[in-house]
Image (tube, rainbow, N blue to C red; front, side, top):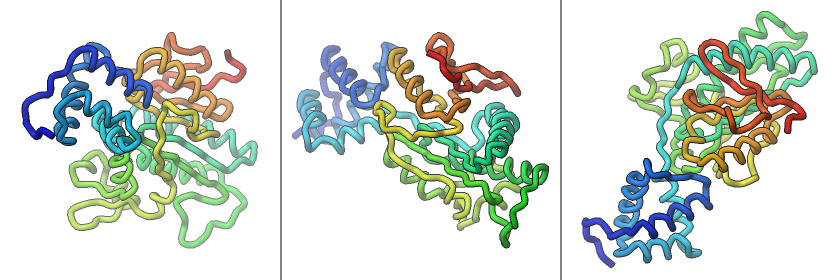
Length: 301
C-alpha cells in the first residue's frame, strides 16, 4: 500500500461512479460546481486509508467491511456549519407565530404534547436553540393562559401538563456525539446572551454545558434522509440548508416524506435561501417577520 502524498489519478468516469454511490446512499448530489470539493474529500479519504488507486478505494467502499469507511466519507462530504440562534428572523417567526398558534390549537384540543424534529442537527446548536425557544414560549403562554394544575416545586422548565420532545438527527456520527455531550466553547456561545446562559447552561471551566433539564428535552439519533424510517407525528420540522445537497428529484421525494412526517397543519422550516416553489403543492407559504415557513395543506395532491 502506498502512503505517498501525491494525488491519486482520478478519471471523470471514476468520479461519476463515486457520485452515483453517494447519491444512492444518502441522496447527496454533486453537480459541476461541487466536483472539486468531492475530488478533494475523496483524495483525503484515499490517503487516510493508505490506498494507491481509486479502484482499491471503491472496492473497499462497496465491501461488507467498508461500511465504516463509507460512513467516514459521507461525514466528510457534509459541511457542519451551525450556531445557536442561527437566522433569527426564522426563529422569531417560529416562536411568535408558529408556537403561539400551536399552543392555542393544542390547548383547545387538550393535546398537551409538542414534538419538533431538527433534521440535519449537526453539533446540536439548532435543537438546543429550539428547546430554549419552546421553554420560553411555554412560560410566557402559561402566564397568559393559566391552567388548573398545581405547579411542582421547584418550578420545572416545562409547565404541566405540557410535554415537549425534540428529535434531533444527522448522518454524521461524530457531530451527533458532540451534540449529545452538549458542551460548547466561548466562541460557539457568542450568539447566546447572558440571561439565556444563566438559565440554560452551566459554566464548566472555560466552556458551557447544557443543563440536564434542557438536555432531557432533546433526543439525538442517526437518520439518513434517503430512507423511509424517519420520525413521525411532528408539529414542526426544521431542515435548514440540507436540501442544497440534493438534486430536484431527491428534493421532491424529501418534501413528500416531510409531508407524511408532519401532523395535520404542521410546519416545515427550510434554509433562508431555500424554497419549495416549483417542488410541491402540498404546503402553503407563510411570510412574516422577514422570514418564511411552509404549512402542510391537508388533502393536497
